[in-house]
Image 1 (cartoon, rainbow, N blue to C red):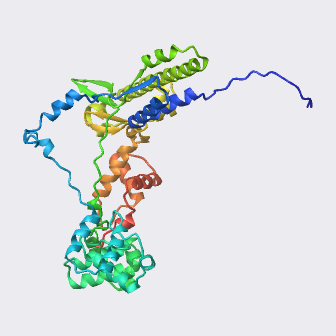
Image 2: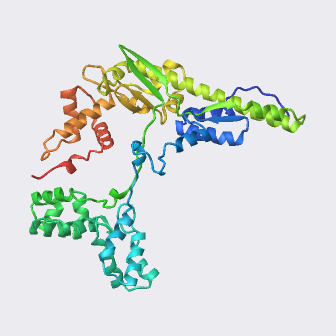
Image 3: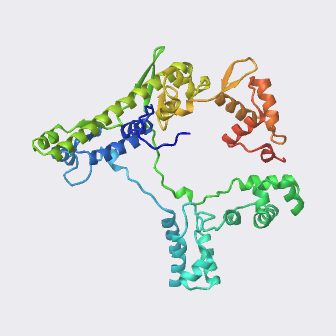
Length: 448
C-alpha cells in the first residue's frame, strides 16, 4: 500500500447548497405572512430593495383633512356613518371577579389576600398558586388563606378558583339543582374515585362504591353538562381569517386557476438611491452596491420561481382533482405528493414545500392545500379510494352504532369491506380512529 504524502488533483461532482439556493428553498415554503416578514427584514438590510404593500394607501394630509370633515360641526361623528358607532367592550375574568367583590364586606387584609388570588387565576379560571405559597408571601395562617379562597369560589362563574378539575366540577355541583341521591353519588365519585370515573373504569368503580353501572352512566352524562374551563368564556380571542394563496373558479364547465398575490408585498429596485451612491468613486461603495444589487436580483428571481412552482403544482392538482373542484369534497380522489412530483419532474420535497401553509379557495370553500393529498386504499372492486373516504366511512359507522354494544376495530374492518368495499387492516382503523379523536369501543360503551 502506497501511503506517501503528496499533492494530487481529483475531479468530482457534487451539489453545493449555496446561500442563494438555500434562500430560494426557504421562500418556496414560506406562507404569505412569513414571506412578508422576510421581505421587510431584507428591506432593512438592503437599501436598494423597496417593499410596497398592495392595497395600502400612503397617508396624505389632504386625505386626512377630508376625513376630518366627515365629523359634524359640534365635533361628534356623523350618525349615518354607523361603523364608527361600533365599540369593542371586553371584560376580563379578573374584572368580572373584582366587580362582584364590591358587595362583600371585606377587611383590608382579606382584600389583599383575595387580590393575590385573583392575580394568580389563569385564563381557564383555575388557581395558579397554592395555599402554602399564599401563606408564605402574605404571612397569613392556612385557615385564613382557605377562608379567602372560599370567597373566590363563591363568585361567578361557578367553578372559578378551583385547584384541580375534580374540585372545579364539585364547586359547580354544589350550585346545581339535582336530586339528593345523585348529588351524594357524584360527590363521592369526584372526591374519592375521580381517576376511575374519568378513565371509564366503571366496572371497578361499581364494585368499589357498590352502585349499578346505569347510575354511574347517569352521573357521567350529568358531569358532561358541567364546564371544565369556567374562565374560557372571558377570553377575547380575535377571529382568525384565512387568505387563500390559490383561487380556483368554476366558469361554466371549465376551471380557472390563479394566484392571489394581494397579500404579498411588491418588491422594487430603489434606482434613486443607487444613482446617488454610484456617483462616489469609491471601491468600498462600489462593492457595497454590487453586493446589494446581486441580493436584490436573487430575491426577485426566487420570488418568481416561488410563483411559478406554486402555480405549476396548483394546476396539476386541479387537473387530477377536477371532480373535487367541480362537485365538492365527497369526490376527492387519492393523490400523493409523489404523483405530482413525478408528473412535474420535480422533487417530492419541492411539492411539500410549495403546499406548506398554503390555502386554496374552491367553489366548495377554502382548504389547506396539503389536506387534498391522501394515500390510496384498495377496494374489493380493485379500484382505489382515498384515506379521507375511509375516515368518513369509519365516522359514519361509529355514529350509527349501538352505543350499548359499540363496534370494535375488527368489526369496523369487516363492515367497511362489506358495505363500502374498503379493504384496510385493524391497525389502520385504529390509526384513523385516533386521528378522528374517536375513543376505543370500551370507552364508547353506554350502560343504559
